[in-house]
Image 1: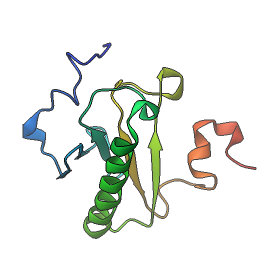
Image 2 (image 1 turned 120 degrees about the vertical axis):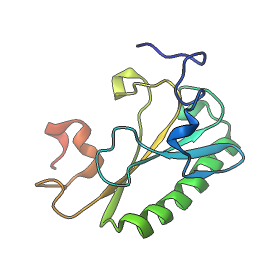
Image 3 (image 1 turned 45 degrees about the vertical axis):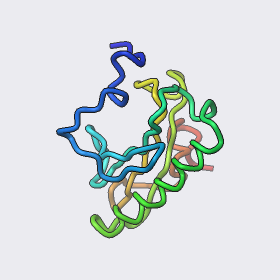
Length: 128
């Protein structure tokens, strides 16, 4: 399905799924398809597809909320590390064209070789 602001799942949020934290310009939810326990999304209120199209104040609010969600996830899930990522455009894997920042808790042993972290988006470039 192609999403736009009229059918965007983040603009038309199903309140029954719950919001874990909220600020004036953004909110945080647990990912519907988590890659690990505690996987959360930080989402600005304004519909725009690219993080780079957010106003500086909106970016700042998202980063502040990211820090707060990281603290909450740390206390609740006790992960050993984190990956933080933003997919921008289809070529980078973005499936919902509304900015969302992934906070992915990592746990010892969750993958065989975590070396390279986010570099793994291009598997043959992961190890260097």
